[in-house]
Image 1 (cartoon, rainbow, N blue to C red):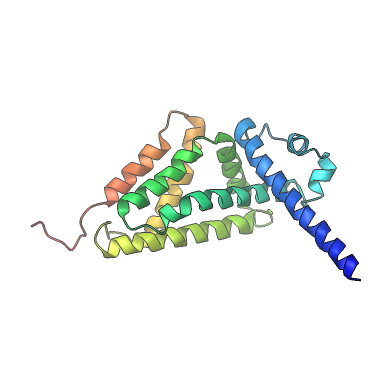
Image 2: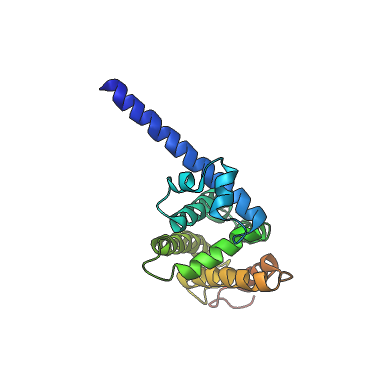
Length: 209
């Protein structure tokens, strides 16, 4: 019995490791080839599996791409979250958020995947529907908390509450990605930086000295 349980644990661990390998390689392939250029066959080839073998680890193609989005967020949050959330200054908050936008311009395939899936996930039956709802709420919540601290200190305008500002930043970032895919010359990072600058002004209840 003990050996059987050990065998099952070993098989499970190998399955988890293979799934992680698939997701990591998929991020590389999609970033390089683009969303439409990264077929299930190409992703399978990248990890030495057949298409059926690849989908053994996921319930469907849609589940696969949803998992890829989760992995992308995991990687990005590990790199950028400390500068966005645990930050002592508006300047660092600004640079962290703008840094995410700047990074996105270096991975157009992943931007294409995100934008396409965000539209498809509006359907409550889509496998990514709950993922996008939770993702948006979590990211807005973290960003709103950071904005609230700086608004309370007077470093950021209090003309809108932090939750509204967080949703505005999300809408601007998502909308700019669509514009950028149509017009590659659009400076997404520069525009978001300008939005930060518009908000970095004295509180409305203060009078000039």
